[in-house]
Length: 534
Image (cartoon, rainbow, N blue to C red):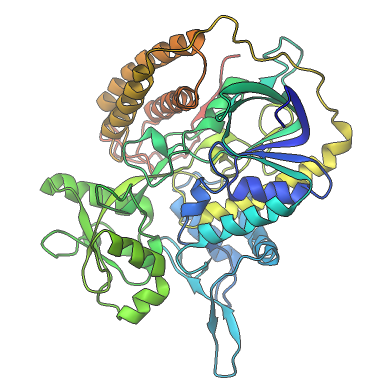
């Protein structure tokens, strides 16, 4: 795949649950290349502990799951998309089981029969989260990766990052069709062309735009930024979900403490041992994430504290070890034994609810360009994502996009030879410090000014800073050879700008967007849609 004009039927950018699922669904009939900018298992899927929400319990129903999602989404979900996603859930879980994902089972009765164990998380009215102990994402990622490695029609390219998409519009041709991408090989530091009949963005979210995040280092908003530059609309970028409970420890890199810990009875406590969630919501610890995160943020600011505490030590030790073996062991590494003591937690940027606008088949505004998973705005999440709906979205929309691509396959030809990447007027940089300094500055001011609680003044302050960074980075990008850090920083700054612009346009508080200047919720819910100027 190192030749200058490599080609494939489908280029999948990203190797998480959405990208690998889609690749596997297409590979029996098409040649697929999956790009991963680090190792295949470096994306956010790996870190999803809780599970996948799906209607499987006898007392549960599609209507109940739909209703819970609509409530969590604070009036901004697309009901038809929510219904489409929930209805297709059981079939997608059956597909994962076929692939070999070993979901946790429990015995029923004394005759040795088992059923899949379902847990409950915040915002859900029923137990409907199917899981693999407390490391569902890792099991899904490992299973799909193993299957993809074995498939003869799937080429897996690790340590490759896309610099930008190639479109007919950018080449001065008619219309706006995606033709492939310029790809940077992190080993050779060379940029090559990869032509493709279809391109799928499965690049995940943009948590690294914030100082504290549960996301891995690769979550730099690449797909959103690339799609925007290619001419795609983005929607609802102001809705960044902050996970309420990440382990607070200088070396833990915001290790996630699953929602399921609260689902199984974990209580949030102040440093003096008193509980506080009941003061904010009658559902207490089982309130949706936005409410829990804001409550923790409020108490930390009120007390001037660095964290609050999550306590499940009232449950039997055997129960904790059986339900949360990985979380228990990880906390123990940092000196906390959750079987008999509370663990310190803080909120951290977790999930990008907005993204590239798509329909139910993952189609974007650019012809033959698709977006699936966290990078996309499908209408499922609205103003706040309900726990464990994210992997469900990855699977359902990977399937619907794959069906659409297969249906169109005979009508879409391979693009002709494309212009090579031009490095004739750039030089090697001797000022890499500019990139690292700008990276740090961006993540600090986004955390301070565009975090859990916002104000017009804070957002305008952030806007001025991001405009300065954009001009600096564009100048740097124009004059020096690209590097992995520069590509990521360029994308992060673009996404930060989209978040800030979206937040300034929303004159209300709704879901994950809470602003001191507009604390009330408007009677009519509307999406924030940004359209690029081409």
